[in-house]
Structure formats: structure tokens, C-alpha cells
Figure 1 (cartoon, rainbow, N blue to C red):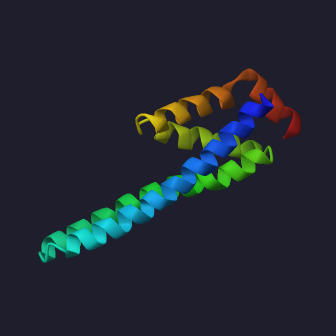
Figure 2 (cartoon, rainbow, N blue to C red):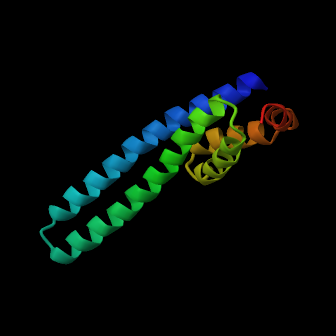
Length: 120
């Protein structure tokens, strides 16, 4: 299971890094896209909506990054954070669903729980 734990950590690091880029793209896209309309109401609503969406995506990705590094160091709390992040990722078809389901399977496996109990 140690190999699976490392794979989960690395996949979460990579997927979270891509999520941070997606958050930046969402932020800039919503700001510039809503400004291009030249409609003041659309500018405000589009910018606020984009900032909220980018914040949610960015926070989930930030938690995934931090927990991915901690999971590589066998921190028990990281297992719980990755489980929560993976639950959110289940709705991102197809890759988020695959990575989320795999992460949940690995981190709830009896051998993994034993592994973290021994090290933690």
C-alpha cells in the first residue's frame, strides 16, 4: 500500500497544481470577459461570480497541494484532508472522478489505516 499512498500523494499534487492554474484562468477569464461586455451590471455580477468560483477552486486545490506534501511525509491529518478533497473531486468527470475514487479507495483501505496508525 505504500506505493499506492505515494501515487495518491503525487496525483493530488499534480491535480491540485492544475486546479490552481484553473482558478487563475477562471479569475482572469471572468474579470476580462465581463469587462468586455461594457455593461456595468454584467461587469459586477461576472466579476463577483468569477472571484467566488476561482476562490472555491483555488482553496480546494491549495488544500490538495498542502495535504499531498504532508501525505508524502505520512502525516495522518493529510489522509483526512485528501479524503475531503477527493470527495469534492468526484463530481469532476472523468478525471476527478477517477482520481477521487482511487484516492478514497487507497486512503480508506485497512492496510493504509494500519500504516498511518503505526507511523502516526
